[in-house]
Image 1 (cartoon, one colour):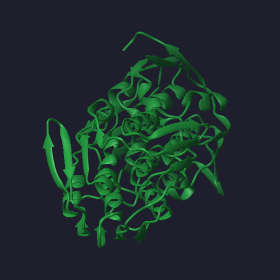
Image 2 (cartoon, rainbow, N blue to C red; image 1 turned 60 degrees about the vertical axis):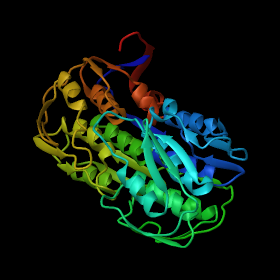
Image 3 (spheres, rainbow, N blue to C red; image 1 turned 135 degrees about the horizontal axis):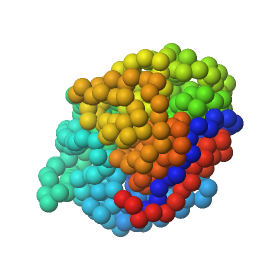
Length: 420
């Protein structure tokens, strides 16, 4: 197991390239199950979740190779329609294989998923949507069993705008006979990326980028080459890191439109931001102004950037309120940030952060992917040395984050440790 040793107090400066989007990659990879042939996904991040999905697809007969940022996938010889617990338990996004499997093969056996430890995220919406398309669903011994003699188009309204459910039902609807209408569909860029790849594969999808999707079923799809979108959460993390250290950093390979909510809040906090093409430059030379956020589904402020923003507000001149309406219990980073000296009070799903307290280095422990990022950001500005344990969480979603931060002037060492 690895840990990070961080010396705080260094200003970040320079330029850094943002990797391809983790969540989009995990939505695009299962689509190879829907057509035989060779797929190539460009701008793919080299992260643990991609390895996990590659192993899962490999269990089904897909040959996967990552060369640089190009992911090669050959789905010519699918041998299994089962997603076993041993792989699915490592990552919730594994459930994305359910829709493609039942749509193309008429059957699927997928373990109920695992994932980050910040509260339950039931799969009911996935299953209800597939049932409306004509799949018969049962749950036995921790597995979702789905079968159908042929999916049929239907009108499906999502009671909650769910990214995962939208992705699963959308992929299944593409091969269903007739027309499917999805309302209150998720608007996230990752869903749009999935829909665009499906269209390139031969699907007929209308309303892409809106919360109403109309799908005309087709009989078959074909293999394609696709470019992944940039990772908006990694970009947000680096923007906040630069602001916290009062630095000046240029981010390459970004889509500022996907970051509108974060950029707006950074400017409200006092950051100077310049957007040019696929680059964003951020500069900060003072303590941030207290700036409240409330997470929301896209295009609102992303829950995946809540922990990082909370760390930023520890430096503000006043009190800030951070409310998470997506995952009410996603505050495992708070006790660890308090170990560094932060003044934070919790009231249900809201954190009240009183900024300006001196931060000093300490040993802290990661609880999930984005909580880990917040601890790194706090350690970058804390006085002295900090140790971040369980950084395997970070490796799930950030490609070589310590190398990227070090290239900007940070001091982070990755060290093997027996500590847990």
